[in-house]
Length: 357
Image (cartoon, rainbow, N blue to C red; front, side):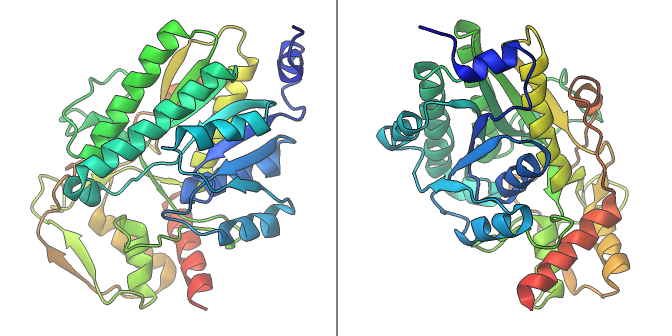
């Protein structure tokens, strides 16, 4: 059997030639921005798999408006192994997978743990099965800083010990990383990367794509913008008695377009590196911890609007404080965030107003 076309290109160092990438959860918040980033910066072909459980087909219209390109989506439940495998049978030239598709609400995972364990783990196993069967050499996994749990020593880096997961969602990411590590140990021909996101926020600079939760949002920034736009009456700040500088939780916020670029860089890193490790982990964060109240003030500054909010009880599953040391991603992936906190809030507000208009 001859060398596959995509492999020949990589061996010749021609990683910018047409390569087909499967992005699961392509209609989601980070998935859609990653599709846009890849289409804007590479000649790679992209296909998507998304069953619209927490997204809308309309995102592909927005992608085409921004990039001028049509992306094919397979409306498939990734827990259905037969339907997942059909994607690979129809696309024998897939050379990389970026796996975003997962349920991601911390409170919902506390209320429905079996739903999260089934969906998030089964989908990953099915994709890895197909990666091995169809010889897909590159796999990028959407992980989370929630794998660290409550950490007393900050910032965290990739060598920080994994702590107790504060929610079933966080535990599914810990399990997912363990599955990837074990899989890569015995399938070294497949290079895998886990990207631990901190808190992606903001919207595409064009103002034409952003976060569109089909259910009530559980993340801070969409709750802020929806409150300001009148979509919800009041923002609840979950707890003001944490051991932080103003009593509210601390997180590391990073613009979604920076997160998207990191996936392109991670794939390029795997393609260009002569012998990359079978399994690698990278933190993706700004390196700066910001409290909930500081986020509210940042939004009020860029929007000129006074936000209606009140303090409520702590939310089960929330970590007190966490922020990142992302120097490894900067060193090996050549990834440097381009957007600051004002950019994050400004683009999120532009997108919210476009949705409301």
